[in-house]
Length: 166
Image 1 (cartoon, rainbow, N blue to C red):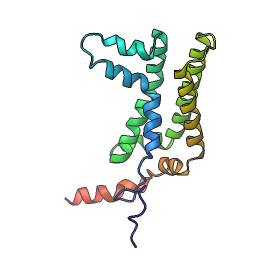
Image 2: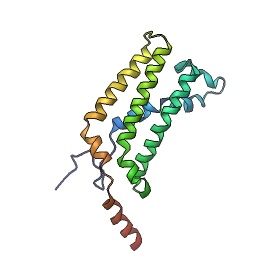
Image 3: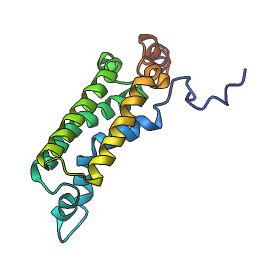
Image 4: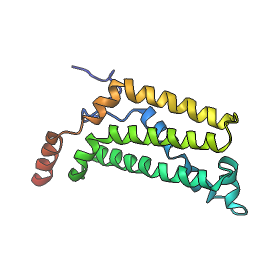
């Protein structure tokens, strides 16, 4: 049988992480992305941060929310390599971590809106729109749920046997 038309499986038959999952993680870790990008500026390193986060507390809250997204990304890397068996139970619970991060980001967005006295800003509306689509995706995506259930106990046994033979 030829399964080359199925693009969401890798060469070992495991489900690849969805692209939108990576986009959600970048969105949740946007404070860290802006921080790393600001380190490349030589003359005014805080200028880029002030452009996106005029209030220092908003930037710190974005960094706090982004730590969880970086940890979930680490779990995704561990799943792709299938090397750290101790992380397998955490990976299967990653969907709940993702839900907690989306709720936390929604609370921080609401806090920023309240802090600005409910004034409309384009950045807030884009954040709310992407947060809305992320919640719908995490709620409805079967591929995402299959992906988080893909790392099972039997996955590492054949590779360990072949490594012991070599």
